[in-house]
Length: 83
Image (cartoon, rainbow, N blue to C red; front, side, top):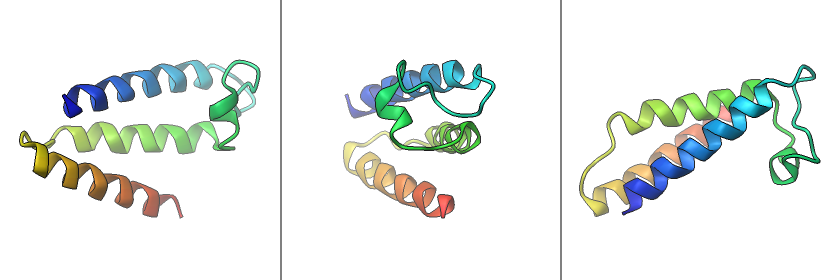
């Protein structure tokens, strides 16, 4: 179930990013995506986050306990790479 939710979230994020990437000013339209625009991230940063998660899901564990730990670890590593 968690894996399905995580995949769904990635698909939604991918849709948001692909829509955002079409803009020429490298920023999110606050009228279209207010919660994403509030983050103040550039398209390059959002694509980097998305690509890092895509890579991480290639080795996603099957058991729930391992998956939870893996998700936390991957999220932390991606956040640290943004600094």
